[in-house]
Length: 297
Image 1 (cartoon, rainbow, N blue to C red):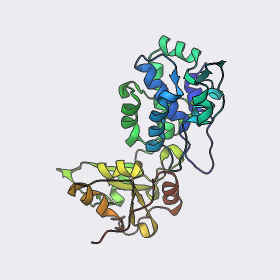
Image 2 (cartoon, rainbow, N blue to C red):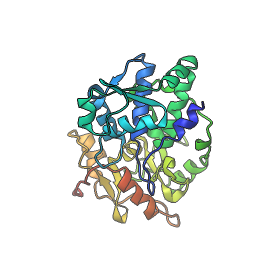
Image 3 (tube, rainbow, N blue to C red):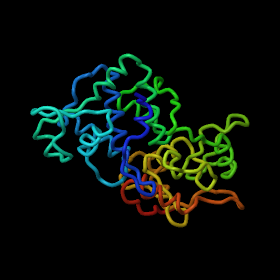
């Protein structure tokens, strides 16, 4: 059985690039628990809060429940659910899962394969990360679910053979003249830029092209906040700051909150700015909450 192909082809609700990482997040969580030696069943009532936090932090902006993937992941052959009455899930409702004492775990054949070939776990994790999340979040997600990131090896499966354009970073940084589009940071060590990255507006994992009009030159901090949905880009290429972000220090105000309403820095004349379709995707699929009002200069 090809577990990498099965992992890559988890059935997820999808329409026009809508994000639905519910199953991948649950499977990453289960792999992390397995790697830590927790081979026992995961009782829904015991892990519900953990899964809620994962969906809140790394899922789509719309509210959702972990009961959905807990029930439906079993149909993909990598997960099983039992209740106090025996095998099988009682349904996808929170109350049903709680009342029945539902518990889930990796499918028996998969557990056997992971014990026989420990490196398989890392390759499965890499597929889940590559197909559902931007690289800026990979290490953080591994840490949150308890996976050892060094074991997340590159996996060669048909679903992830789409190759990135190695020129993307240089093209985007040049377009924005090696300055963060949010704060203007342009640090260098000698002639080498440091702390500047090319961010995809529409994530590569969701069909985002390696084109300049789908890119932003961002410093490491603002790239991370952009991919976490704290920052966004609104009409007139003005910076959005989510009301969900809270920071009371002068640094938090200066580097994040004070950005609300500012216009992007760049790109240089003659180069396409962010395409409206990519900006709209980020606003609907990544940016969390309502934007803060623009701050006074």
